[in-house]
Length: 640
View 1 (cartoon, rainbow, N blue to C red):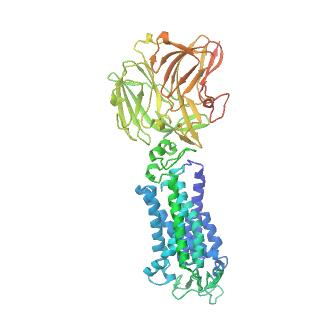
View 2: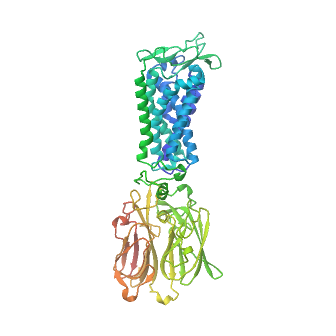
View 3: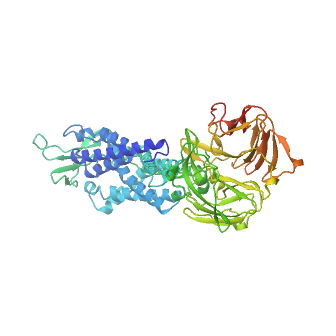
C-alpha cells in the first residue's frame, strides 16, 4: 500500500472503518434488530457508503436499545425522516456509484457521467428499492407502486443528487484526480463523501414527505411471542395529525416475515396532513432548481469534458490554476511523476553526468540510453521522482570526437512516449528527434536508433523533445561533449568541469515538472542533479586554471552565474569557439535555457570561492539556506 499523498492515510482509515462498521450493522440488524428487511439492507448499504457517519446514524436512530422497545425508540419524526432518507440513499447511491464506475471504465466524459448517474440512481431507487422491495409493505401491484412512489422518489432523488454531484465533481477534478478512477481507493472515498452530502441535503425533504404521509419511515417487526412469553404488541412509529410523533398500526396488506413468526409494521401514519397541489409544485420546482445547480454550477469551474481514463493517476501541483479550459493534455503535462512507477532507487550519494564508454561496432561508436522512472536524491534528505537516463540525473555524458560515426540506441521505459534531441548538432532530419514532427515518439517499452556523423565540436547536450517541458524538467537530459579533430585548436586548462543547471518542484513527497506558471514555480535548483551543499567541491592550487562548460539544461529561468575570486574568460558560446580577439572577461554570465558557455577561470588567491546563480532565491533549498547557501552553488577550494 503506497502512500502518495497525506490524504491517503485518511482514505485508508475511512474505508477500513466503513467496512467494519457495515459488517457490525449487518450482524446486528439481521441478528438482533426488529427492523423490516428492506431497512436492514438500507442501513447496511448506507453504513458502507457513509462509514462512521452511517454507523452513528444507525445507533442513534434505529438500533433497538432494549428488547421490545424498537417501535417506541424510532417514533420521533427526526428518526422517521432519517429512515426515509436511508431508504432513499441506499437505492439511489447504489445506482449512482455503479453508474460512476461503469461510465469511467467506458470512457465517458464527466458531463455524460453525471447524467447517467442521475438516471440510473433514480431508476434503481424507484424500480427496485421503492416499488419492488417495499411492495409487501405498501400492497398493490408493482405498476401501482411505481406510479405511487414516482413523485416522492423524484423529490428525494433530486435533492440527493443536488448534494452529491458537486461534491463528487470537485473532489474528483481537484488536484488529485486519482479520485476519478474506480481502481483507486480515493475514488471510493470521494463517493463516500458525496453520499454523505447527498444524505444531508435530502434529509429535510424526506422529513416533510414522511410527516405528510408520502413516504415510509422506520418500521418495526416483532415476534408474536415476546421474551416474557405472551403476545407482543406490534407497533410502528409515525407522526400524528399535529405533525408530532405518534403511534399507528400497520394495514392488512403488511405480510408476515422473519420465518413466518413475525409481523412487520410500517410508519405510514393513520392521520395524513393535507398536501396541496401548490405545495407539491413548489417543492418539485425547488428540488429541480437545486438539482440543476448541483449538476451544472461546477461546469463554471472545471472541465466536464474530461474523461477519467485521460487523467487517471494525475496529481496536480498545489496552487495550479484549473479552469474549464484546462485540457486533459495540460493536466497530464503538469502532473506529478507517478511514484508507483519507480523502477530503481539510486543510492543517496549517487552522481549523475558519468561518462558513458561506447562499444565499437564496425568503426561505429554505439551508446545505449535507457529512460526510466527512478528515485534520486538532490540532497541527503530530499528525494525526487525523476525521469532518468541510465538511472542517473543528469543522464550519462557522451564524449565524442569531431568526425565520429555514432549510433545511439534509445529504449523508453517511461509511462509516456519520448524522443531524444541532439541540441545544436547538425544531423539528418529524421535523426533530429522532435516528436510527431520528424519521427513518431517512442512508445513505452519501445526502441529507436539514432545514427549520424558528428560534424562539429564543442559543448552540446541531449534532451527529450516530446513534452520537454515535462520530461526534461523531470531529468531527461545529459551533456554531449565533442572534442575537435585537431586537439591543438582547443584552449587548454588544468581541469575541466561540466555544469548542468536544472529547476525542480518537489512538495509533500511529490515531484512535479517545474514551469513558469501559477503553481508550477520551482523550489529546488541543482547543478548536475545536486543542490548545495551536496554539489561537488572542486580543488585547485593557485596558478592553475579550470575550464567550466556551463549548459542551460534547465527549462525556465535565465540564470546569471557569478564567479567569486575574480573574472573568467569566455572562450566559446553555444559550441562555437570565439576568436582570440572576441574573447572577453566577465564574472557574471547569463545562462538561458538551451545556451552553452565555455569559460576558463584562473585560481588567483587561496581560499574557498563559490560559483553560483546571482538570483538569491535560486541559492536556497525550498527557501532555506544551508551552510551559507543552497541550490545553484558550487565550491572551488584553492590551496596555496
